[in-house]
Image 1 (tube, rainbow, N blue to C red):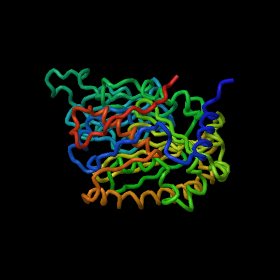
Image 2 (cartoon, helix red, strand yellow; image 1 turned 90 degrees about the vertical axis):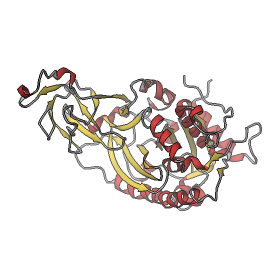
Image 3 (tube, one colour; image 1 turned 90 degrees about the horizontal axis):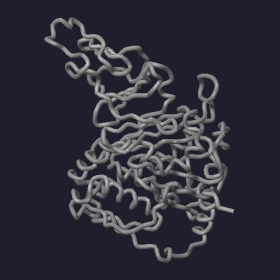
Image 4 (tube, one colour; image 1 turned 45 degrees about the horizontal axis):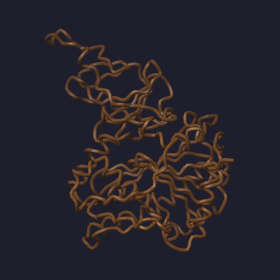
Length: 403
């Protein structure tokens, strides 16, 4: 009988728990040049090739509950908003009126049947079509059909909305395919809603923040009274997936997060989410420590080369009524404590790597997701565009293939 993914991973966790030395036959991981966290030109390349050309998380379909619901997105390098159009499809547009460039959406969110620029009242419908221009007679041969709002690629995967500034990028379905077989039937994505949302600005490069969530090597030191009591760091299974994605799974030492807080479970969750601690890295800037009760999305948004906005949002099964169930407040308090422990460490790290006292970052076996992530960064930028001193050296590592 074929072994399920959950069974295979549980076996790997058990084997890791017994391991006494470096895995036989596994290559040494090349060190990461530390200047990747401080070099302005490398940061510019990332902005150009990663944050302008990759699929980026923008929200959930529940954020736009009815026709005309809109939401402004402030995380990208350009102004963007989402809207549920009259055909019930979610669309994204540049928040830029095609007259003089003023925003057509000012509020963070709302609901409307038309979008009216507050500068000169040019008006658009929910499809971005220009439908009204005050004193149109004062324009010579104005072709309204050529002045519609500029669309941005916007696609939905399992209820989660993603946008991409690159019109030539692969489809979201192809990009997320490595996660499809593992999560699509587990998380009941379209039927989730936001339960918690928190933001924190941290004085570090976005990769330093992201990489802190790609390994558990630090858990016994940074989180001795919190995460270390729940996760068995010695029993860790790691999977490297295509497109820069990855998976990290631990055996649990104690009760799962949902049961501890009397939270409604996800009805479709299986053993991979129920009996193990499972976290996915979604390239380029998200970590998803999903379990049988909720889907937390932790995103790392670069503000500048040494400043990152860390945004974490918890999506959970829909509940009756307008009030969020009390259990989520208790979970938020506990999870915030873990996050605060990471925040306190990240700022000093940036100051240290920028001091000149460290030339490169040696990686251990438990940090191979960091190597896999950086290799994808170089691939997306184009290795020929990266100076030798900043490039990650390539070695062959086994990457799991999607079905």
